[in-house]
Image (cartoon, rainbow, N blue to C red):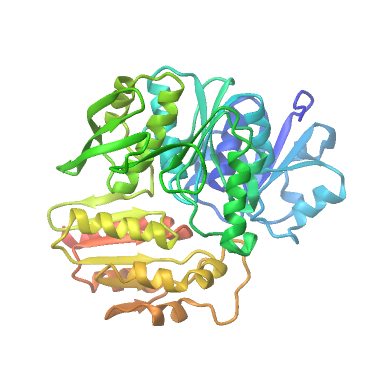
Length: 449
């Protein structure tokens, strides 16, 4: 991929979390960056604020004029864009240079020392912690993140061009485009069966990814892939011991193959985040960052937006926002809520993401959502998909075995939350539910004022 003659980069689906990090990266490197997305969000707004031109209607005449200089333009798109998209088809028909997002990321990793974080859960948290550790330790890495890091208010931690941190996304087998030097695999639960068909094919794809790692591979203990292991009280190579919680902060020890460190402090909630942290610790430590430097960096780590993020935290009311969109992730959120608020009533507001995922994991969703005391279910967020006959939120609701449950529209959400007496409210999902959270927050604060 030769960018020497490229002046303009056009992103179709620029508001996606991975796409927007690349857009930000190329904007910083003085390319003319512009793009299309279906809807305006806080992410597109933040790109517009730095001078990126974005429009929200699929219209060729809305494309900036610089983009029509074909020889000097690169087009980047995400697989979530439908095949009938008129702008994408215009670029295809006119023989533009077109790459998928994963191919661009792959080219960046090929020319850098690459840390890659793979897994069906935990990628964003692990890679963000790793990026923060490296930044604090003075390692000049650029990190492309799948979430907004609170420390940087961005999904890009900007550094030099010789070291990269990336999420290795299994969707569409994208991670097979990467060239990782050091990698970890956090989990391999069945997901994206619309792409893989069955769990075995997904597992084989992870094995293919592991074979691309040129230097060191870390794996969650118990996964069927060879590598240096990490875990909690599992006699792993990097093993967490003596976990305790004080005032919402985790403290724990870590034993590595060569040394130990006591009383690491972590201001993230949930044992799954302890696992994510030790994975990032192992990767940084393998690169030569001392355990003491890592522990110091972790104290200042503020987390990621929409990853068990407190929007309200008082003695009488708690509102938590989380990106969880797979049953395993919802279980982790529910378990963390029970661990922190064992005596308090909990209400989950869940927006299912994708018809296919809802269909494939309906019984597992029913089990995980039943861990909350009350449930409000929103309509399925379609993202890239067309509806599947019979697969609706009402269909899912009937499977969930709790007494206090209802399916509501977005317009009815506030009044139904107001009708609940739950102290802990958790808003969960990967669709546009994240855009509703601040309205819910403002309403609840007005209610208790």
